[in-house]
Image 1 (tube, rainbow, N blue to C red):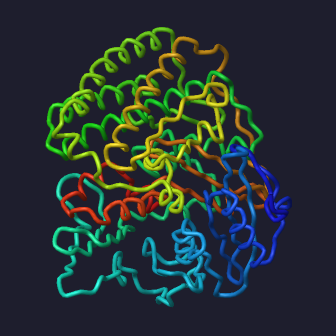
Image 2 (cartoon, one colour; image 1 turned 90 degrees about the vertical axis):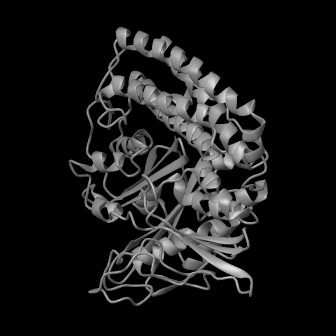
Image 3 (tube, helix red, strand yellow; image 1 turned 135 degrees about the vertical axis):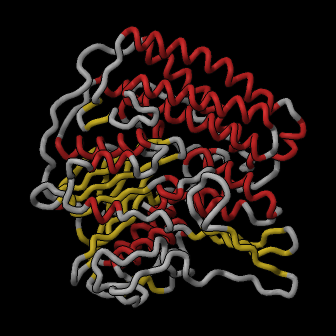
Length: 506
């Protein structure tokens, strides 16, 4: 462990004075040294002011179950890039440039991420006028030269109900040489609006950071607030939160299994899973009245509790849904035409997954055993460990199989917790946030690792609140999975990742 890194555990806080401000060269070298030893960047962001930008990097080490923080300050308009040495840093650096107006020298592909003005309008990394609107998607794109190479542009407006995103393919015939993904059309300015909080509606904002990941983001925020307030959550609340998180995983994995089946034209599984996704959403509604879990969580515990009658009802529903889901998914594995489309399509190697810093099912399908619930356990997962499912082919079939295996483990977990729900209360009173502290919370959403980091000022208000959705790590994985594939494989590959546009754009 470098002396420049201050260790911290998931769901905890520490005074900012405990994180030494080091010079830029030591800051960057400590990140590179940590990456060489197997550490991974989970969050890297800036706190801009008129004359100085403070940079904070949070790293994770699975082997030790620890997180580490380092920080530096710069008064210059330029800062060295480490992206050519540490690939997983490239998107974080571009994001910092856009938010803080800092130019990263020697970045291999230095361009905006979400197409908005910086948090300090007087600073802009691309010298764009502060009084002119920035048009999303207007930038230079990578191009492959050659007489027989052609370019295919898709989106940002798509057919059907889908969020906006622009995909630009460089192709030779039907073969894809390169895919560049441009997002930012869903940018809502969440992170800039959180400065000065927490506000009365902050939790509701967190629940909609990615609309299908209410519990994942909501719990990360609650963990941050509890760490800053020194609050211990009752055991019953931790179990209720775990049940809600796994129901969210079940609903979305079931929907994805059906959507993947639909993309290869296999309607039996597609139709069954479409209905069964609704069954799992209805189970979440039993918890709090909302099919998406809105209003269930609160710092200090949960708003709602479960009665014995609720538990019996949920167990009965779960038994029926498990039976139907098992029948629907087994149809996939027993249909050669389906397997012929899934196997070998959109492959990613273990080495590339590590280099890109993939998380969630996309990482586990590449043989990367990475899961916050086991590596940096939180809540009920400190006491109950779910086995981590992995595969080694890194293709659409592996990403599909991982979803099914995780769905089975989630159903086992929920059944067990409903049988032995602990007694006691489900909520404690909150306390004010500590001033001049940093808090870190990781949760394992259904797409993968979610990271929230809060930095408070002297009054205990947010000087900065950073959110990293799993899609932030994984969009580049989709682009790499398309290399060497047919362009007609894109919808299937895209669905096998099923990343969030709004969760990325924030």
